[in-house]
Length: 175
Image (cartoon, rainbow, N blue to C red; front, top):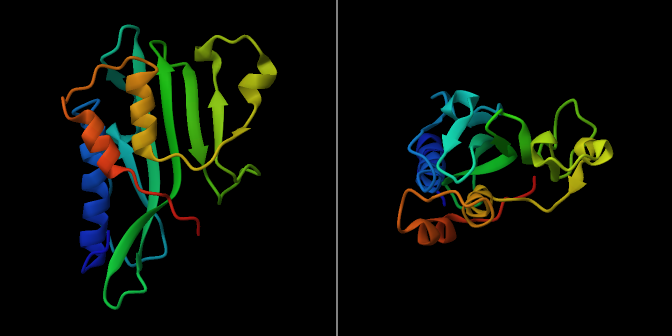
């Protein structure tokens, strides 16, 4: 979605993801207001990176971290925000990771492709699987939230959750 200013693009990006997150929790996504034209990425985190308890039959915690950038589009004078890295994870009641979808194409890790971690909270008992970076395609936040509802039985906070998650899903452009 293009915007007339970098600030408007960042706000629209954040508001769309906040609406999606509101299907599971009333906790806010946070980012620091700054010069959006900078080459530095913006960081969007749920509850400042702290785990958020979800309403589910078994204790589940949610963590969301996104990096995004604002850039001028090919259309003259318009701006767009796009995801450049993410980490979405579900944890058990003791904060042990069950699964985490990650993509961090830049940084210190040699693993730059989108991948899935299956953690100790999944209780699979295989150390090699717990350390593996299982390749995936890019995973949109909305698809991850839908997974929490449909596979982990998180109780949605909104009756219109399916419509919101369906309408918010947009492809993540590769740089």
